[in-house]
Image 1 (spheres, rainbow, N blue to C red):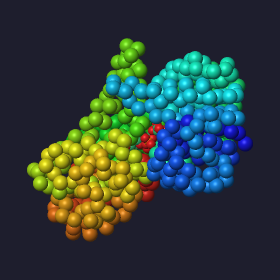
Image 2 (image 1 turned 135 degrees about the vertical axis):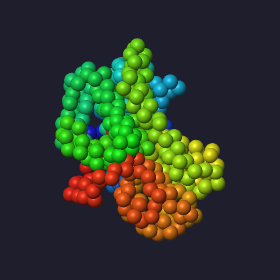
Image 3 (image 1 turned 180 degrees about the vertical axis):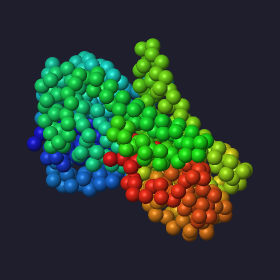
Image 4 (image 1 turned 90 degrees about the vertical axis):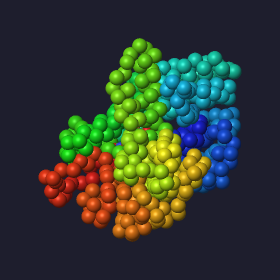
Length: 451
Ligand code: UGA
């Protein structure tokens, strides 16, 4: 049993702490937010993540997981400190490293024995060296320490299974032995472990997120072209995905990427490149395409409804993606704001995000279920592809609406079926094609779902 401290109990930190505890380690999770720590001690989760509350409870009960606000308690007899603090965007897109610096200073002042400091937060290339300088500069006594980068690749909504079954573990350090020790902690996960230098590890995280964001913007660009040429982007993605060099994942056209990672990380990578005098054209195109998706959704609704003023529009889903209540950079916020500015009345339903969303959009009427929401609506707009929306009683929905306008921003319904039911349905990138046959997708697995 190793003793681990996890600094920062946000998404990454809380999942890391709970999962390492579940692997049999003694984990002390630290946060400077007393309210959050007190809540966790009472078993209250600060975020919605499937399975997390149960995992935390099990490990607290087994005396493997503890919560504290005290660095000196957290670092007593601790060999590994995972830094999982937030790195929000600064004014120009650069990463704001305030919390990383604060935690490095606090670790330096309270560490009592040799310590491996492992950075899991997404930080600009070169931050590991900078953290080492901060720790060196703030140590009370000269105690050996090593800095290792171990970027996190988990996704919200499937964070626990992503942590427990990662595609790979990347470790970057200037000290091979320190990296090997961190590798030992990850052995139970049975994933390939790559050891490289600090800067390369930090870059792997940005390059991975930027590449995934590029796939999304790419398929959204193809969706726009499909609409003009009468092809169906969903089937195009399936056909492309069978090529192993392309792969079927992250090819869902829709309202673009949101959340706390892709928007911030693509911007930060572009900023790092620009700072060194490079013009990262592709990254700018990825961001431009993504930025167009939200106004595009508003324009489409405008076209479908004619005048938006006074119309009642229902939003199916609010969170930036399914299985989370995270509203950070969620398309719903911009879309609701734009529709309200055009004079629409907005109603919404989301299985878990309404409580978080309400203060962000006070004018929006939150409804207890999709059917109450659809009552009297002139249009519905799918924003988040929650599974429960795929099973709606659509005939009932149709009967409740004032007008049958249905804009599917995540392509979760079959256009022909929706038209057959009587909806004036519009998906994205699903151009009208008179040659289309009914059996095009027969026997094809749902290929664009994530692994
Ligand atoms: C993303 C990465 O997938 C993780 O590997 C990474 O660890 C994480 O960022 C991070 O840096 O912390 P996450 O933001 O939780 O994870 O969510 P994703 O599932 O990647 O989705 C991001 C956005 O892209 C969502 O808005 C989603 O709706 C959108 N998306 C995703 C699409 O529009 N199309 C797709 O095909 C896939």
